[in-house]
Length: 116
Length: 115
Image (cartoon, rainbow over all chains, first blue to last red; front, side, top):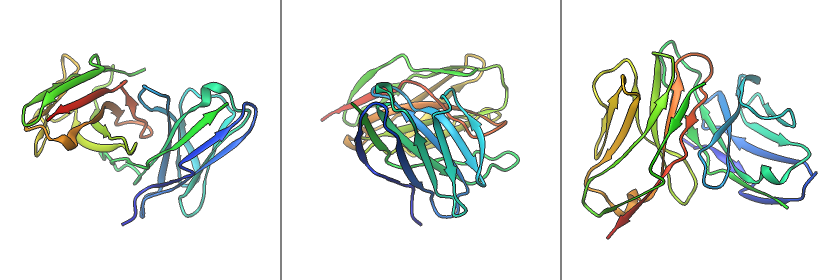
């Protein structure tokens, strides 16, 4: 059983550029969530995708967008990068929630984005 | 909106001793889950333990146990027989049982194990 894999592991961009981060879900998982973790902080929820549809969004501007593909892999796109976008971006996958499920999120190791 | 507070930015413990990490949360909901995640330098979040709010019995996973006080909205993590491999950032997290699977995290506690 493979876990969650993210790419790239590190990248550097300049202000105003655009970035795409990728995530492969754990085998059998159909739900993907993205989190932003600034240095010294806890992760903040960006959005979740379930069966290729956005299923909840945190307090992030529209320049943060995402996609989920039929194989349940996912992308996070950030346009018009700002210095404050520098952070670790974590992807997590899970099975869809049952009636009283507490599906455990399986996290990847993240993509470290630095905006100069 | 739910909030999670971890008031101990750093903690340290001697190897083989016991340490307790604190977490409080605020919610108006009655049906939710609480989690403790560990984040080692490898950056990957690893689930340590989880607690369903409807269950009065405190969760236990080997050396890890929680003290869940629902009325006080408190959810502390006790690590017994601390090991060097326990050194990491520990995050407390809340998840509603309604809607999507959004986790609300605290700011974390850095745990150092002293050999």
